[in-house]
Image (cartoon, rainbow, N blue to C red; front, top):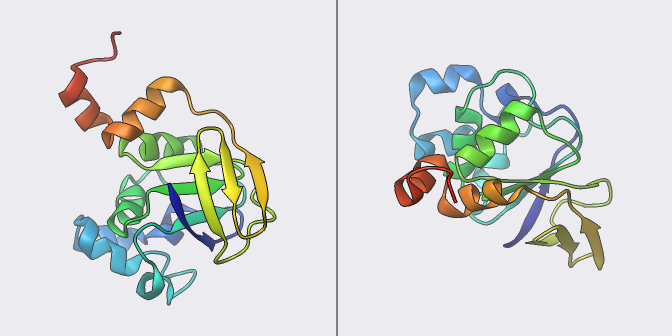
Length: 161
């Protein structure tokens, strides 16, 4: 997976990703994408492109456990979030909905850098650096590859091997 880095800082909570008042209006990902990060960067939604990669610092997705914070990201065509760390709830919501959460040191990634996300690493092609990523357990890789937990279960029936 390759994409343009869209950089945010630490402690990006779910209400920064998409405000809770927006989920009362719609749960449609195509609608929610227009409100993505509106409280942090009002121009973000208008400039996001399918394939972009969200890059953040520590504790991405903290705050409430609203799953719509993952839905809005996917609705914008973003398939991966790279962060120094995630709230556990956002991390699991991401996997369960087919959004790839990648944990690595993001401090040297800059807005617009071209990132290539591979198994266990993030290559910053702009800076010529390779960042080692925390391994995603095999079952989680399979769930993300299937497009989320529901498509995984439709395909496999359960977690048995």
